[in-house]
Image 1 (spheres, one colour):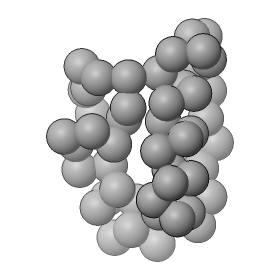
Image 2 (cartoon, one colour):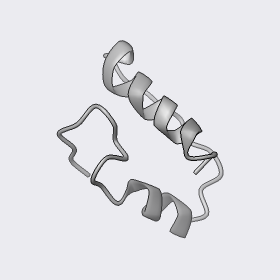
Image 3 (tube, rainbow, N blue to C red):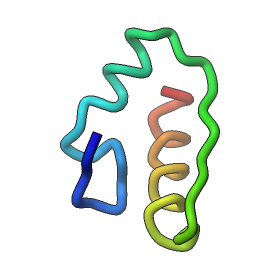
Image 4 (spheres, rainbow, N blue to C red):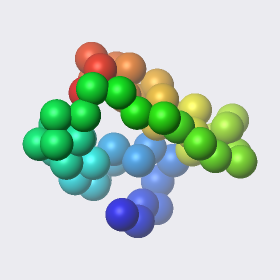
Length: 50
């Protein structure tokens, strides 16, 4: 899945895919933690654990 935004959930099907596969937790990896990884973690948390 390709994204052009710091938030991996923004304008993607990521949340839908994770919910459909009944994903209960995710591991986040990245080299730019202060940018994309940080934003994605905060958004996932804000979505209420997906």
